[in-house]
Amino acid sequence: MALEFHGPATSIVAPGTEGYLGVLPGHLPLVTSLRPGTLTVLSEGRRLYFEIEAGYMEVTPASVIVITENVTPKDGDV
Image: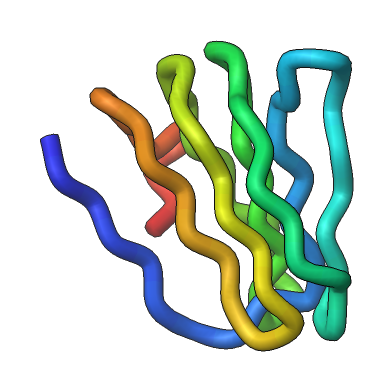
């Protein structure tokens, strides 16, 4: 399943292999592996939840890219 979210985000919390990690706008560049879990995006006052499988996340000061085999929106949000 391919799922794309485009839009402004105030924060992202992702299930890193060493524990959950938070990303805010302007974050330093980072590439990290992800474990299965819940990815949370705060966007325009709404919390969006996505169940993801293991994968990778690339962070730049202006964007975040998550690469995973499967992602499922939780609670009907998207």
